[in-house]
Length: 380
Image (cartoon, rainbow, N blue to C red; front, side, top):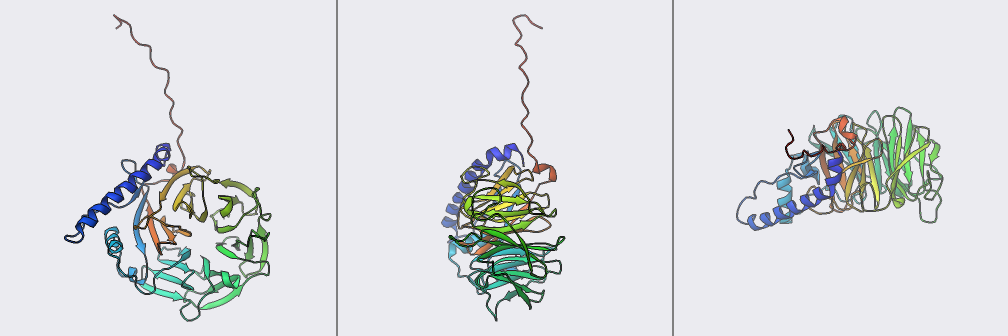
């Protein structure tokens, strides 16, 4: 990820969109009479620049565990209007992935359940099948892979074990409208974003211990100053204990240290590099880069640890690989990226490729030295 990638990002997005549109025309013309031609996968940025993000697949339902459907297959199904199968994703609002990358947990707000996709065992579990959950939003996992589910309707958090069995529920009277959740395992803290309501001052992030007791909060109430929030929605924690909160209606992300001290902000309202409309999900990759889902722009922007924007991927559209009002994000240890595609009713899967830790830092452009004097007539 370099200055060259930054400067060409918007051009790359347009090139990608044009390529996809052209491919759609070819498909529509041929799919009725012949197999569709092989299509190139969606990548960002567009060639000839080095690929950094590659679209892998879409997850719709338990049927997707049986086979790793290709981009071509999903696109043909989309064009053909194939009916969705049972136990399919409707409104993905929370994502969590196991430490080994084998299991994906999807909180479905409309289905009143959490879907568990086990890619290794090819199995599917629906938590909430017998006792529907109260509008699940954020999900997180502790060191034993117990599942913490924010039930917005109940204004609290339910905990389930690996088998999907209920363990306990915790909350606090101050919680109004909980959303995203993150667990700092090393420091024994659970962070819950409290989106609150328009007339409320409780626009904060509640901090619980691992027993479910409220021990503090992040934020100085509703507002636009440093450490203030206006409808915070999602939260994440990096290995150093830094906390990232998407301050959605302030169109920014705020970073705090492990002690709750404000460190810096990412972004502002706008449509240029590093700007947001309605940021939602937030997560870090293994290099310490921060990924921020923007529901308004329907893309994901990547920032390095210094807060410099590196790249974006996605873009508004219904075809596989594109997004429509995405919300949550999760990244596994191998930098496989999962994005909850809310209005497309699916989870989109991408890989970070061709990238090392050095690619997270922008290289200043080399300034050319003074031009050599021109040689006059007869010069050697």
